[in-house]
Length: 296
Image 1 (cartoon, rainbow, N blue to C red):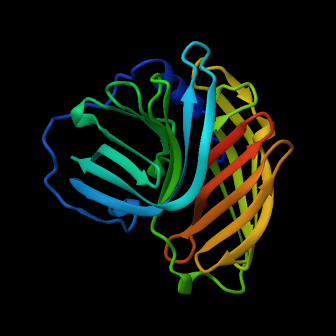
Image 2: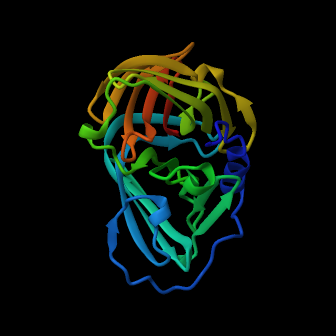
């Protein structure tokens, strides 16, 4: 069963945000293999690339380099997106995500850092301006999906933030009928809280559905200040809501004590074995939160 906490996300974020990690590496040559469709993580090649389909949300930000405060604009999505994973000798050597408004790419063969710790895959470019945190699907028990969040332009005064969910979508004809299911998992996100500072977040997520209607809850949100590494509870970013299922997707309006917005979800696997998706919420004092989630 997938971990529903991901609290060790904070340790990875601190490493990525405050210092260059010392893992990764490898040669400089490419695999020479073309990118092929993704069918499941148990079928990843030892050497090659696989492309995952999905969706992402994004926003732009500007930062005051003296205080670290940020202003967020153009929070949008979700939009159709892709992620690409490249392996060599059975190890992930590169991955990236691309969607409307934002994209990131990391390649350890070009000096970027890839670091796997406690079920989290962290990545940082060699110039330390772009970093990402994705769920390690194998370590967390996912076969059909992964999800994560990223920041570009860190330390430059402006950039993009994004979050995406990627995998093998369930065909509408294969979504169960007349059954009920509850999925448990976690989220990864990026936020601008009321104090003006940028954060990376994690939470516990549950999705309950009869494949006609759906209920979503994100609770126990924890936040790591990207500038200082300080960890704190962010209960004002928790949310719950309900919505409807249409084929292999669902949408829910959500709200919490100081936030409201929307969740857009997808079923993954042959028969909706897993669930994932993205969310975007806003609140008073310029609060903005975007993220992705997954569950089994």
